[in-house]
Length: 266
Image (cartoon, rainbow, N blue to C red; front, side, top):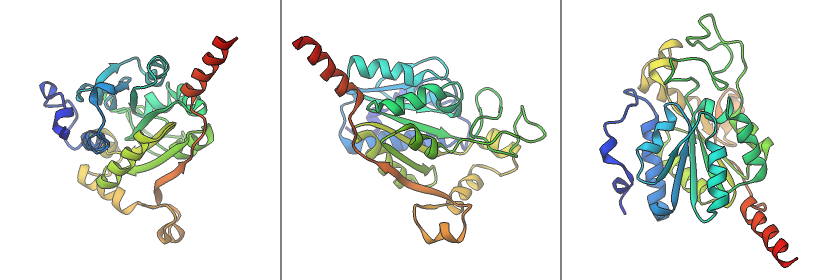
């Protein structure tokens, strides 16, 4: 199947603002699914609420548009009841690490085989530009007109600490890298986290005077570097991209099945 066959054309044009990076992530996602040769009948996409959550409505997979912050909880139920399915969970700042933070760390700890895509635009876009746990100290938003005093989570560090067995980061500027990392994340036999730095020119870019979508993507080009590069040594402020963890550990659903078999034998 071609990548266009994974799109629900009847729901286009999409509702994302001009320049929003979420459409680039959607593009990368369907191309990764195409590369893997997955059967769309075996894919379930689960999302919560917000700009990022709308992505589940644009793909022709089984999809659940659930409560804010509860995407991973619903996804866990799907995976435990039908472990043969490929479960993908796109989330924004809130679904992943604000109201959804508890679900995130426990899904990672359990190593449930699903792919969590953290679409990090550092703002709550759909509800009016409020600051989020990923906004960062000193940033501006509608609810922090004099500057944010909250420090942000590092998605990679948090994922590693919580026990995720695949952890990676990329940006919407690095499209080919994104497709490659999405392909690896989806095929990983455990809990996968891919953070994608994505631009929100409407709220974050405008409020923080970063510029339009092109200028924001330029910061991803100049402000990031590959893991272990000399550039990072020369400029510690650069954000690293690539795979931070990729390891095989017992997967939760398979372990659960083995417990059921033991119980049956007794």
